[in-house]
Image 1 (tube, helix red, strand yellow):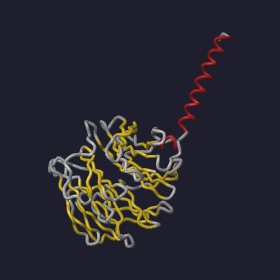
Image 2: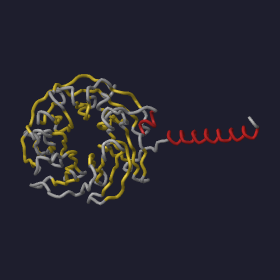
Image 3: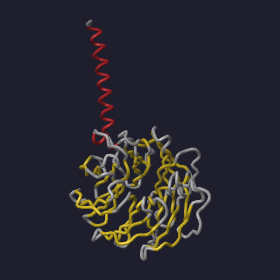
Image 4: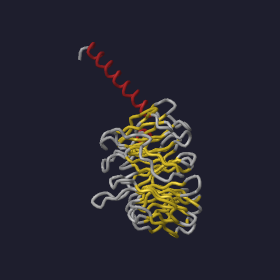
Length: 346
């Protein structure tokens, strides 16, 4: 090889190598989460494609870092990222179709271990210092996990698909989707002690400022389609206070959320709808219209009541997240991973 040609080759090689190293260094850096200014986005990923991911949005810098779990750990997260559960300095990332919970450091996102062999985990709820319940799609049971050593210690038999849970007066209330019931579990004995019949397919549950429980029921899909409904329950005597049925059998609401005051409920039904806990009827118009997008995830920021909504687009390409003021005025939007479905706020 001619000397000048060799020199040019070496220059190009060094330039390429240098740029690759810079890119690797860039990819290895994750901005530490900032309290009040970081929103994590749960990107489900496409079922069976193994492309679930975690995005981190900085509202302080109006920026987003995608796939931060893979960046921190040099491996993919898994298949169908369902929810996030905070435990001390950890975040538990529940990965449904991978049958596991990934435990990560809540600042660096580095892996701290994996809880495996859970048939189809959905959501987690801490019910005591050394006890966490994990609901499940296929297990016909709620898993009992000791968070101190991250091991499964038992389970509570509960026939059917269990979904979101909430703690109230020493009882864990859990949505049983196929049974159309809310089950109450004594967290000391780990026994089901009561139940309340609600509408078809209860999935979301929250507690308001008065201690009452609200459950959102999505309704059945075709061929036996039924309208969704929202139920208000008195947990002291396990009785219904009131319930609202959506106007059409094709209305299937989801993602019931509540603001920091415990007074205003929000849910998705195409657009974003709002419901004061004292209202006697559902509102007919959304606070935020869908306008051709596919609203899939919803969150209410606990510090300023800003409304966070995700657009799943076609459920194959990367989605978007929209940040709105508490009155429904768009402030920012961000490109995130595939099928964004939920949020965790620092």
